[in-house]
Image (cartoon, rainbow, N blue to C red; front, side, top):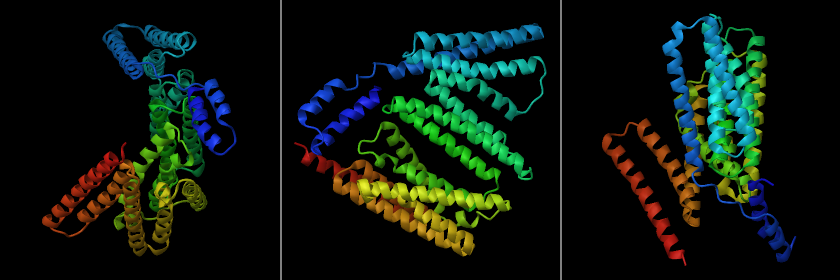
Length: 443
């Protein structure tokens, strides 16, 4: 059983005993069968960083040597060198996978160099034979060649490079708005397929090791890849700006409370929730300005695409509401309050679409009311439970929205300065009070 699964089993034992499912003796025998996770080898992250830096330095050195002698070589020598270097890195990847499967440094270094070697070899061969092509064609070929290596090595850096490559390819392959719908549909399907493939590799890696910083970072990379490609697809289909603005929040809101779906959430869920909470705050602040809604004018979206996009947004809203309700039922309102952001976002998009400029004002007022309510709720819950993270999250929401309103108003510098001072004093006072309570309650 994987280390993360063993930790989950041990975490569940006290709950099973309390529920009367098993007795203490049975729980002790199960705990003995699945011992606690062994400590991570010392210097794991150091070996990862050193391995990647070493691989990059070697690659840079090879490139400089090749560049120095490039003009003196024939076309066949250039192509042979490019393919030879690629073969060397493929051999190293195979050796590391077979002989050093648990060596983090080897896996990261060989995976990173092999992924970069594919791109370098393609570029060198194209230059040697003067092959014509497009940037999106080059990136697509690179991804198709490199993804098997990413699947074998499961390296954090190589997966990150693949994710960046998918997003850059999606942007490069973005068809013009005058392109036929068949071309736009094909491009969207390709981009979604690439993003889903990278996300599936991330899922396989995270399922094997659900705990730890590496798994959390990979989960964020996978979600970010799908998220970015979805936003590019919206632009491809000339989605109304209101849909684009709301979509950011409709994705971020359920992800921000994702960790609440577990009694003991894995590390990757915690990191995805934290990253999504930060994105959600940015979206809420942007949507709190009525100009953000008024300037999202309807584009010339094809009729069929308009209906499909409306259905997708409605489905996203339904999923977000289901997640928020589930987390509320499991953990309480304070832990799910960010998930309920889907409500003002959906209502704001609807009002802006139906009422025009007046609807934008209505949407902004609703977003401001929700943001302040959510911030006060989190602040009160954190203060009551003596949880610094929750209290600071609520205080950050209130503070950022107040600062946005200060900047958006006609107040003079004195009033704005006093407001900023009040916000800073609030941060210091809340943190100091909670820390004192913790010290008093400590045994």
